[in-house]
Length: 461
Ligand code: ARG
Image (spheres, rainbow, N blue to C red):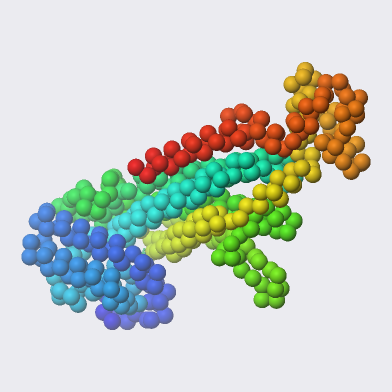
């Protein structure tokens, strides 16, 4: 088949080489953006008088037919036409004949592909923002239903201090809010038009870049044509923001997986989000959570792959840049589906309140309460820490907990300890009394939830 760029070639192309060079197997995902970009470009060619009105109408009609055919699945892409841009142009030829050849006036595939990618990511980032927002809504709802659900808070995966389960959910709310912010802030750099940078140096045609940018809904245009066709920072930023997002989802999944284990039994996932074993009839595995944790690997990989592709590239376009696409598509798909699964999984998981609370009763996670109690009665905190530490050691030897120590024994240690100590040691009291801003106290968690609800509402306006 005749190549659209075949003029200066004598030799025939070979299929195995075409296969290696082609991007059509994956960049056909950009077909819609490619046609939209061309529609804006041809409109501008008309407005500036570069093409006649008749030519513009013919090309526009042709592109509209292609848009229609695309949406009904009637475009059959071919490998010989290498990539989405040449495929579309070839289709246009078939539709309207040789006038199709005028579409590429004042443009190159280099600014064309960059434009397509900017258009694509603008939509995807918007979709990601919406999905994160919905997941944050689920987190807040789960928190609201569990303000007084007590669980062990951990450090080093050891019981540390009791906390409210709502507080734990709201910690993830905080992470996801930052993720959403990062994606929102990145839009500024996605929202720039490279169209009209042409191959690398701009063009001799009197094009109007501001006009095409406006038609395509871009807020700005690249200031420098070399930069415009070479820049893939906006994709890197997407991959990087996605990596941080996946790291958060993965941490959450790791906790869910632990909580589902026989040892914890803090939560139970619904059947929808679980799978069985082909040999062990009793199994109910948290596969979806494990997969999200696992998929963080490919998302990080995509970031590193593009960073590596870019690191040694001289300006301007190099074919290496074609390697920017698969990782971006894969990451977009991975994070969008992961967010959906997370929202559904957390929204429907059964929270075993009693098990959680019980596990804070047979432990020493109230040791800080006793130390704080002594400190509030005047004992220097360091000394209180020492006293309680020794007591914990002797309790461990005896196989009892702080709440089991008789009052006489407490008073023998120090008369500062009175009968109200048992109330102080209760895990619910421990949580309830943490009134410091941002702490796990019920009042704090309640107002944190209120603030986040207002925040979510304001985002919906
Ligand atoms: N398929 C190419 C890519 O994805 C389009 C740009 C080709 N430009 C070129 N000068 N060969 O990067």
